[in-house]
Amino acid sequence: MLGCENAWIAAGALAAAIKNEGSIKVTDSQIDEVLNRTRKQAIGGYCGLTGVCGIAPAIGACFSVILGAACPKDRETAVTMKVVGRIVNAIAAETGPCCCKNFVRTSLFEAVGLVEQYLNVNLPLPDGTIVCCHAARHPHGCRMEKCAYYKDHTTGVSKEFDPGASNGGEISMFSEYDRFHSSIYSQEGVLGRKTKHLIALAASLAAGCEP
Image 1: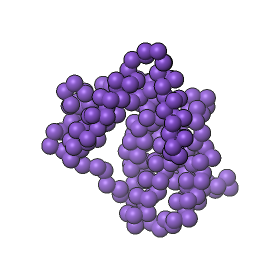
Image 2: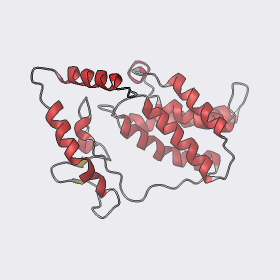
Image 3: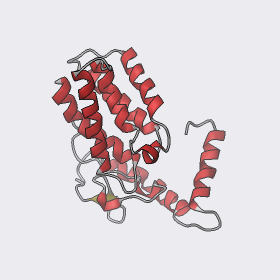
């Protein structure tokens, strides 16, 4: 639910989508540069310390690399800064508590319009409503109804959910895990929630998983 890998997802998804659309040339080396720049700016905890979620500069890196923005340049640099400002505003409307899954989706939706406006590239939007099935996994508590991607786990229906949409299968796929996750993390018990998360992190690192 939280983590700087979400900035990498946003940057890689947007850069690859622009490349695959084909209207403008985007090379693999440019995508590598976008990810390298994202790595330098998406640092854990900086969203709270500096007020800038790492996903915003990740989207900005896409525009900066593609436009060739640099200090001596005019429009390219201005556009990149305007893009980052728009992404920050979009994310700010979805805080309380923060949820990187929400931020990625919100930022990419906002970026589609910015790509069309500034790069003249039309990217497709997904069909149907995106429904999040991970509410029980949020370490700080899900925003629930305040989030556009939330579904009520008691009814299995979100405020915009279409049961006939292709994402309906995702609900059943994760429902068992959600129940298991809730039973582990919802009760404080002898060990606190934070301690349980740290144990899970330690176990994943010991197993060779990337955090």
